Length: 124
Image 1 (cartoon, rainbow, N blue to C red):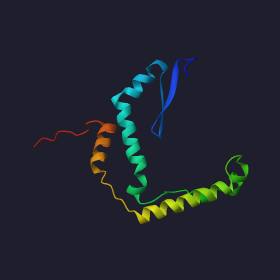
Image 2 (cartoon, helix red, strand yellow):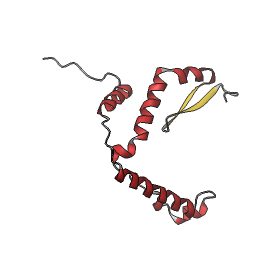
Image 3 (cartoon, rainbow, N blue to C red):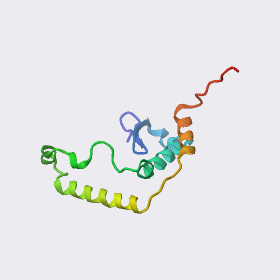
Image 4 (cartoon, rainbow, N blue to C red):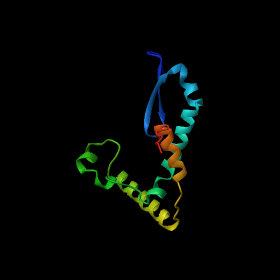
């Protein structure tokens, strides 16, 4: 890590890569920014199923073309079957244990985190 250009690559939640000077990595992990970002990521990643009511949107693993499966060294029909079985079990859990969290307060916090104070004063 960082031996050639003194750069470390780390990840924010599951959605981005962060390049930082290797010597600044501990400071990044300890920063309020990083902790808040990771907290929001965990909150929304872990509740995406219960807030959206669906397991998947768009493409599902069942739609992977056979020629792609045939060309893959480590993902084939057995893995597709396993993923679909897991999705069915997850869907059954969601149906049997409905949860509807109220993330409206968190949405405002995330909006402010991402956009800052974007409110503009309006003259009366």
